[in-house]
Image (cartoon, rainbow, N blue to C red; front, side, top):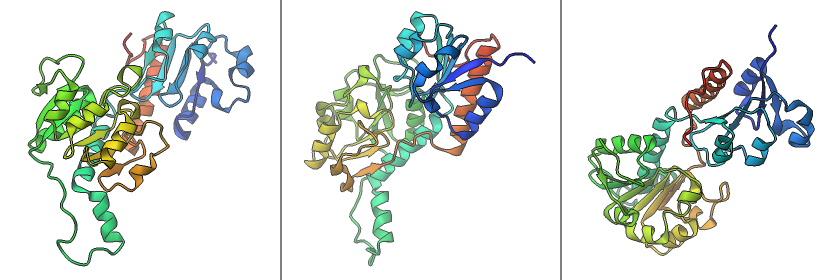
Length: 316
């Protein structure tokens, strides 16, 4: 029987995927090992692949201690917790799981947008707590159809959000580092100007240091007291303290947030705001999408170990 490939798994990917990896490979399960990599030092030789996720990451110090490492296979579309530069400096390829989660994340962005604008979670609570005693007593909300939607980050997820906006008869604008060829949407070079133009600003860009607090107090003030910000990207992209102040002072109309800057910690001020809709970082959290993401990790690993390279490479 041929020797099974040895891989290092940084953190769990769920019982089913963990079991599949264990059945097919010689897996060193780092998160279950007291003493961490120090306790596994005698077995790190021959590890050519690391399996991880955006939650667990793969730091430069870990990469440095694996002399035979050639690939990092990560679960999730984001990779800001992986030191991609350190990996590429040694010729180590990195993969993520793009595309398979685009539609689910875009769906949730729209769920949050509608919840914040039409106050659906507030209305649900209003009915379930017995407050509905007469028609017409519930406060008016904000129309969505026909409005202007700005998207920060017109990548695959941003485009999926935009397509849904077109179905609502919306004007769509976007801000990227540069304009994209072949898209039918308005490019706005300044994020402040995009916010000023928009009724809804949807954050769909990458996380990490380069985008930290890109949605600043100035951007939020430009969006204004009738504007709504939606974030399905990373909590760090919005200056959360500035957003809380703007909401509390009525300078920002509302927010739909799947991610927070210090999650799972939630600013207590948000908990009592009816103009805010919150979900617990569940953009890709459907049975169908999570199965596809896990399968893509397995497919990337199998392809690499078979000598065909990774299927979904993260660019240098």
